[in-house]
Length: 488
Ligand SMILES: [Fe+2]
Image 1 (cartoon, rainbow, N blue to C red):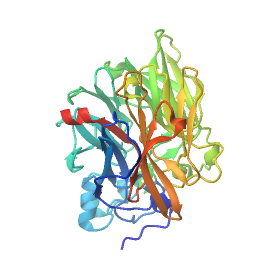
Image 2: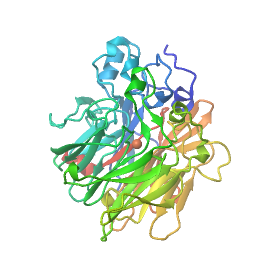
Image 3: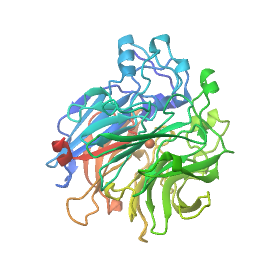
Image 4: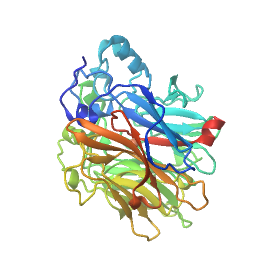
């Protein structure tokens, strides 16, 4: 019998499950639209063994599981399997946890020495017919999109030099190229960042390295048609702290934030750095795009402090969830001027998990979706995920002047990050797929995939597919259309 700590990371919605299974035919309520045909891949962390060290960041270290919700002909099926990382295999063989604190090998058991520490639990990335399970602390693991079997660690046919690859890549909608980066590219607490470009056929064509002003958690980045933008917020790492068995991340309120900008195909030696406000934090960027006059707009789910409670604790900070100053903020950078400052404009409410149509990546865009907390909520949000509270409202934000649309869940229910499915009909806005968790008892939950008309989210789901098993919270997902899967 495995005994997990009686802590928020391991109880309620976060309770470890560790089940690999298939459900061939999900019960459907409503009607799944005909143009939804493909697979919704989801990254779901699930710690296979109880920890042997106390670690506030344990919620980030759950073993990666890859889940697939397959939809065709109005029917849906479900599958979930562990990513068989080096770490997971070693722990299964030992029958216990071998790896200690989040991104601190100095806290590992001796048997873990020399093994890959990544749990591949953050994003299923699809590109050039390959499915890669990514986490920013290591290299991706390739997974078979049909069987969900792990094929091994992936290094772009031996070409990759960086030890890490982000879980937040960007795919250009016209060229089909994959843009990625890896921070702490040559080891723990390093300021080295690798910037890579992969062509539409999956060949790594460029990898350049540059230094950031300090070693920071670089969770996401953006591209525009001509530039790549690398934001740096002051959640920092220190080698001495790691060697002493401490936390990987501490947030520093008195440090500047930065955005590094380079032409997408240019040399990193020409990188320009723009200074943002002190102490701010952001996990996810919505999008970025250029104006004809040389300005670049960069839209991000920003807050005035790192929102993760365990990072605040490690930093001697204690900011209540409602007081983090969260907002959707646009930073404008003028490439035609010599100023090194960003101009900040609030363009939306607090929230996270921004979603845009893949077709407007790096381009001007008229609308987007994200998750937020219902300001009129009667009762507390569902406890779960790294922040400790799950979002309960889905927003459609319109940047062309129309009012926002909202879909609020009843108390005890929450959204996981949606994926966008384009419409087969010209001019259609497509669909959002999201897993909704609903609490039915102190430790009991029901789960269903909701299918929502993307241009009319307030109307609620047009269909729901029930998943007859308990699920842990998902991190990120990726939609792969049936045509792309067939071509692969
Ligand atoms: Fe993320």
